[in-house]
Amino acid sequence: MRKYWQVIGIGVQNNLTYRFNFLARTLFGFIPLTAIVLLWRNIYAGKGSDASVATFTLAQMTSYYLLVTIVDALTAVNEDDWQIAADIKDGNISQFLLKPVDYLWFRFCLYLAGRGTYLTVASIPLVLVTIYLRDYFVLPADSTTFGLFAISVLLTAMLQFFVSYTMAMLAFWVMEVSTFIFILYAFEYIASGHMFPLAILPPVVQDVLSYTPFPYQLYLPVGIYLGKITGVALIKGLLAQAGWVVAAFLMARLAWFRGIKKYAAAGG
Image 1 (tube, rainbow, N blue to C red):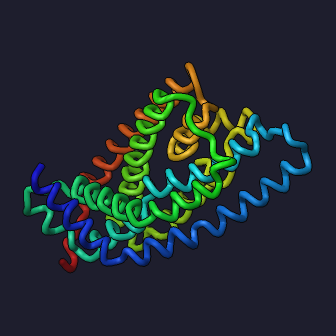
Image 2: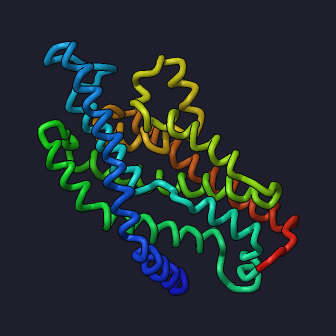
């Protein structure tokens, strides 16, 4: 385990080099958040003070998008899949075939280092925005709800990484994986609840999406925090999320072992 802690330490040091980029990315990320919040305020303004949309009040809707920003900062995969694909194409993974270091866990440690560094840099603007929107920010019902939210966020991070890692493994078979990654991101952005709460969608569409990993990449933890997913639905959601984490991990492992058989060790 010591070697992986060292990888995390090196990853943190490397990411701190780009701390201004992280800060700028966070600040500019608030521009679409502000636009969306203003849009929903205007929508609710025409419906009355006690109005709700898909059971969401104005405070809950505002909290939803703020939580989406926070969870995204904690779990999003930024350039990890591109770097993995580049390692494969450039032959950089050859060294991991000769050393007692598992490439998957090596990349996972770098992912954790990147998320930790990004959150540290972004924490100040996130806190300031939360304070500014405090009148519209909903707190969790109790400590148990917050604990389940934290567990779901952890599972979300693992699911995000393993899915991205699996997609990057396509570099063993194709020269350019960008098209596949962009298609995946497009589905994730809509079907994960990033653009809008999935509760707005027709029930039949929600049922179909529940059989995909997308709702468990963002909507589930936010829904748990806001108390929109409770009881049996909450238990089923966490079990399904854990199941997708295991499935994504197995697919990542399978893709690696299949890909290594075709690896030509070019470059590196």
